[in-house]
Length: 197
Image (cartoon, rainbow, N blue to C red; front, side, top):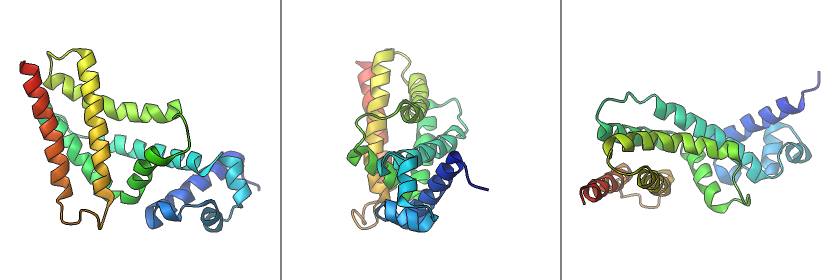
């Protein structure tokens, strides 16, 4: 029995994910995916407008997995500790999924898609809201607007620095987890200082 269009699409996403996890982003081309999956290059492009579109779907799955890991954090009443627990889980996730995370990180800086789809942005927003919820508890007197901007800055800075976690040779002597924690907590300390002014 022939597979439906949706089944083919799912097969291609699964096979592309296997290639990303095991071989890395450089290995994920239409030709190599066709060879690995058994589908033709034409079939791949019938399912996805471009390889960037396929990678966006892969990244959706990565963001979903990250969110699931982050939402399982056992939050206590100390928002500062909660934020650091979120950071620890984030770092663990990136270390455990270096090739997938590199794909996501690389996608944000090199893709040909002019605007991210709403379904993609919603995944990022859910993760940012976990930060914002705890920042709200930590900085109760900060206005909603300031807190939203501060949350976005913290997220973008953490995201940008996360590229360190996916590198093997570059910055090899650096304790990457420590660098992430210093940046994150320095930002929180700066917010605490501004809150007092």
